[in-house]
Length: 385
Image 1 (tube, helix red, strand yellow):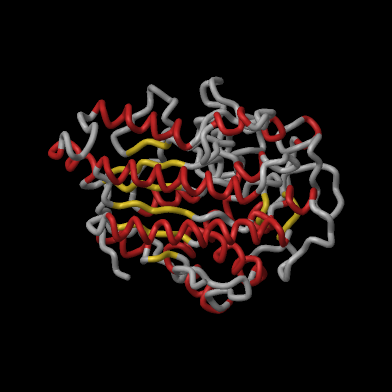
Image 2 (cartoon, rainbow, N blue to C red; image 1 turned 180 degrees about the vertical axis):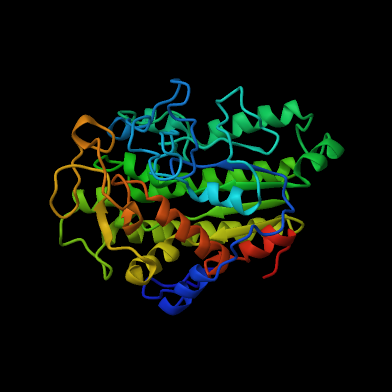
């Protein structure tokens, strides 16, 4: 079956030289600013502080030290409840538009005039009730994409935008200069079901249905500009490599079964997005191919400055991965981190370094991993094919 805008696992989609050039000569100044605000959703790859910022929400216990150094050491120089040493992809998006970093929704005192971040670390695409029904609630964040949609709806109601059909003028005003950013979501759904009797296909069906339903709800409300990230190569994360047998590896040294799962998920998601494009022809929906972007970075790591592809910068235990579930980043046994995080892809075993997020963003912006062009959308609100 031919999939849309996705390359086979054997393809990198861009040469090493091209990657080097696009990163070296990418614009040093922000692109033009057609968007005045951003509404962001997703999991820990996008969360700028909903987890841990108020004490009301905590992520999975294995990575519960996000409020401790060395989280945030590289750019902010203190913890910001971001799961990295510094900035995330969404932070680089905000910078490119000369907008402030997005405040978390749960920070009620924040200035939200330039947007809001609803993402929650550990969040799932599937509603929490599904995991309760299947006895999969241990160590699971109860907030889902449905929760984030509920928060978003409250925000919209405060701006007198309940639905585009009932209040067209108000909703048009809200979304005229607003970018809706849907960060990667769904990886936690698969992770939470490992070792259970719930089949991966079942998770896939429900997760994609949830994401599609979310996108439809936002489009029905009046959103015109939406960016959707696919799942990354989850088999390249340190935790996956730590848990999987060495016999389960692909051509880039990652966990084959996990990467295949993410690849299939993305292929199906893209067919759903194509259907939405036909249903909402006035909207611009950009798909970001995180899977192939990550894969290309692995294959061209030396030219991009990465020395450690799988080992954590912040962890414990030594060995090939410097990872121990009993001593994850920020805990007493892993309170320090590597000397130079910019040479590492993996930060704490599940999340990435600022250096990696920066390269991923640049590849989305300048490379062949956005369909249609992300750069064109951010410059002119156009679908440039």
